[in-house]
Length: 245
Image (cartoon, rainbow, N blue to C red; front, side, top):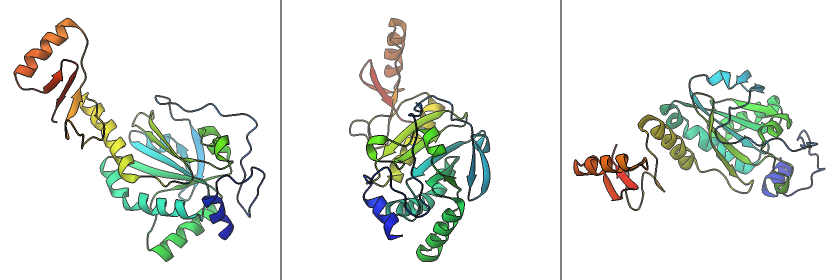
């Protein structure tokens, strides 16, 4: 366990290191990176909840897959606790969670049992077992950051399209409020045909308002003027308008 913590705290350890049942990931060639707008790849994975087919398991709903370098590491443990504490908020937005860590299922179960016994938190979402193959497929091993996975977050919509990807370095734990903000912002955009300003819903100029996209044609601009006059939304100029939902 002390050695695992050393990996978490010092992610630049050598590529040839093997620790206990930890798996070093050696890919002969880089994986094609997943990009925004891509279909989430079809995967059959072993988890603490049994075998799961992705993305079919979450057909018709949003899900977030997040990765960890390994089990029994301090930063990863705090993240798992935080994901669980925010789990109800994700579910309120119709979104499921699934984690991934480079270790075997029995190690995952022991780690989750430790979290429950020592920290009093029961993890309710599944955790994927991986020896590196899935991490390579997802493109979450960044060679210049060592041979373990970075802390990745894939936000996938109800059509199994990757809508957002966030990467954190091994040294920094994830911000759950920001992940929830991104999820809520994407769903709000889909539902209302709007886009979100910086720091939404607490923007320095517009507060909780959203931005109304403009179609750059003369007819659209004339229509914009009429709608502003009716008070449908406010504008700083014809190309930067906002409204409340």
